[in-house]
Length: 457
Image (cartoon, rainbow, N blue to C red; front, top):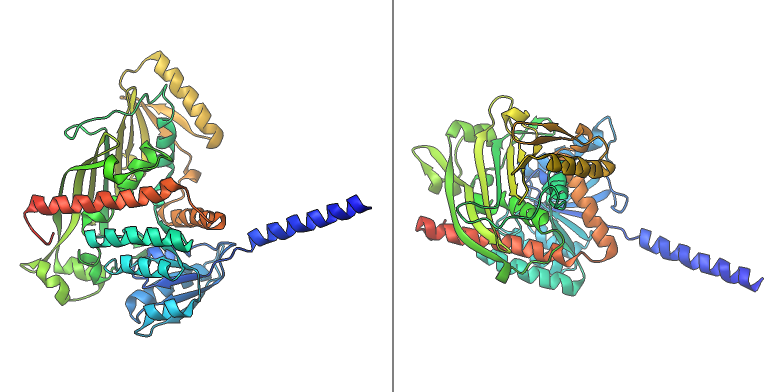
């Protein structure tokens, strides 16, 4: 009887403990949602997250666009969400957010000018932060970001940035193949002239999001508010290099990273294109410094050559106004191994879908058998993955169900972040990856200023 009583007590304690873990709950805060990425975090519901979301922002088209996107998710016919947006638009909206303490998880995706300040002050107030990239756009911002991470550790809250590209299936399988030495061999070191890792992405100012034309705020075209191209989209590419080539390894930016060269250049936007993208008939005053002959010059393109743990890397981010008919954003990734190169292409030949290729340095029967065995291993995790021969090697065939799309990747990042929050910590490599990533982009920015011989850009 006594043993049975003890068993009941033990079970009760275990159930209470499990309930305590399950009851870790989060309330979202949204601040200045000027970028559609803020809404994409809410394209799905999460069991750990309350349906009430407190939004703090100035009244205007950016707020209305954000609320319309969230309401669209609530009203959709399939798997609708159930968010309840509670909005405050007073001029003191940021201080109000801090004083209200209405939530414990801040989603930041908008104008980057004050983003690092918001991160620092939010973690000082004990609020977890999930931030869209970039979290810092200049050297002052990087210094504050380091302070924010130190303060977050002290206050036991977590900062995380939204690295969606880790959830693209071609990036995932490229990473898996790198871990198979009989196929990939060893990662080459390369040189600045012949890098071992090359990543390039091409984006477009005018595009469709959730089935509708995206209206961009005018500040998106101002590098002092959005950040120049060398510190913006490059964050994804720099992140992928580390995540793919040195998974789960801690990085010390002071010793592991060296910037060799960097440059940036402008995309020219006509007034008609600017109006199409923003719905504004004229350039605001803060952009007129970048207008020449009625054409806006946006320094949205950047390139950097650097080394990471001794491996030579080249990163390029390009922005055009609009994709060609039937086209879209493109991505290229080359990683050189001692036995094969792993290449992701996303051009017209691939119908603008990301496709992974394996191109061996020597196409032998032994290599073919090794690749087939590697694909067999990968197909246990991702059933249906196969290969098709090409002139230079093989194309990896990936069933479409694994290609969840860019918008759905935001939910995957959020789920990972919530997992870290439930555990009360994240791996040290995640923290050092973020710090070293922004060190890389900001250092490249500083290098490109010297290259241009200017003090402002």
